[in-house]
Amino acid sequence: MPTVPLPDHAAAVSAATPSAVGECLLVGAGPGDPELLTLKAIKAIGRATVLLVDDLVSDAVLAYASPQARIIHVGKRGGCKSTPQAFIEKLMVQQARAGEVVVRLKGGDPAVFGRSGEELQALREAGVRAEVINGLSSGIMAATALQAPLTHRQHAHGVMLLTGHAAPGEAELDWAAIARTAHAARLTLVIYMGVRAAGAIRAGLLQGLPAQTPVAVVQSVSTPHERQLLTTLGALEADMAKANMASPAIILVGDVLKASAVLQQCGNDSDDNKRIEQPRRVAG
Image (cartoon, rainbow, N blue to C red; front, top):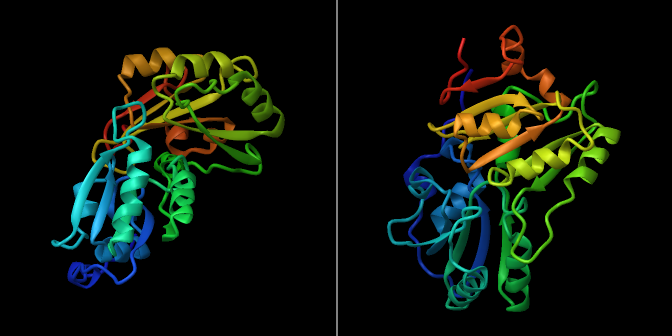
C-alpha cells in the first residue's frame, strides 16, 4: 500500500523567532506514530518558539521542532503525577503575551479528554489568540489496529467516548446506566484511561450488557510497543491482569468487534476466543 511521504524536515521547521503578538496553538500529536501527524500539526510544531509537551508525545514527533525552540515537558499521563493544570495555563498565557509562538502539544486529539476546553477558556479570558489543530485520537486508532470499524450497520449505530479516570472529588461514571444505554441504542464504547478502573468498569457494564460481549484492549497503539488483548466483558479484569496490560491503553466494548478482521482470525481458537497479541503482530 503506497504511503504519503512526510514533508522534508528542513521545509517543515522554519527558524523559530517570537512574533510581535504571541499566540497559542493546541496541537494534537496523534497516538504515537509520527507518520500519523497531520501536515498542519507538523507546520505548527516547526513554527513554535515554545512547546509545552505532554508525556505521551514521542521524541520522533519533537524532531519537527526548531532547534531554537524551548521544549518544556509538563507530564499529563492519566493517573500519574504531572504539572498542575492551572500552572500550565498560566505558563501558556505568560509566554504568548511575551510574543512567543506557543504550541501546547498533546497526545491524541486536544478535544478528546485533552483539557482543551479549560485551556481555550484561559486563553480567551487573557486575550490570547488561540487555535486548535486536531490530531488522530487513540480511540479511533485502537479500532483501526484491530481492523475493526467503530460503527457498523449490523452491529453499532453510534459511539460513546468515555473516560475511566474521574477527576479528584468527582463521582465515578454510572457504568450500569451507560451499559443499558449502549445495549438499547447499539453503541460502541471507547474507554480512555480505564486500565486502573477495569474491575469497576466490568462490574458496572455487566449490569446492562451480556458477559459474552466482545471487548478489546489496545495498549500503546501505533507504537512499536503496541499490544492487543481480545476477550469478553465477563473475563475482562482477569484477562487484563493475566496479560499485564498497562496504561496507556484503550478499552473497546461492543458487538462491532465481531467485524474485526483480527477477531475473525481468532474465531477458531479455544478459550472463548481470547487472544493476546504481540507488538505490531497478529499471531497466526
